[in-house]
Length: 195
Image (cartoon, rainbow, N blue to C red; front, side):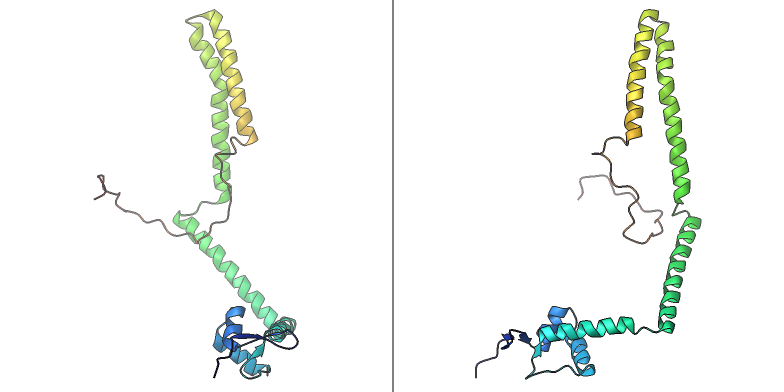
């Protein structure tokens, strides 16, 4: 006796397939789909299901399940979400206390102070160059000061614009993993030829 194909078309041009094939295509286990079919009295014809009707029936039950969520269920879900967010915040505070995580404001303030310091030092360069070169040649000192001032202003303009975009990476992306405590005392790799 010839074997039946895994997938057939009905007269209405609907796909008829086994529960196993339907489960694979829906991304669920065969047992889970069989339980859903039994619980919802979905019709099976000769161990085949109408895939289009199955999808429509499953979508209908999902939509009615969302709408039928009671007030107490919504309250429980909101409480669970709140507790989950609170646990994440407590984890961040713990990591800050351990020194593995630095608050964003502290990093921002430190960077601003560092950039202000760099800016001040760059703005002093033309006068420092002029003072050093003046002892050698007073005529050349003014020209050198102007050249250095132009270079410094160009650098500061590039910094104000954001620098070279080719060398920059996205800053402030959300980390993909949870923070982990740094390991201390990890030995450095031995120098040599790798044997």
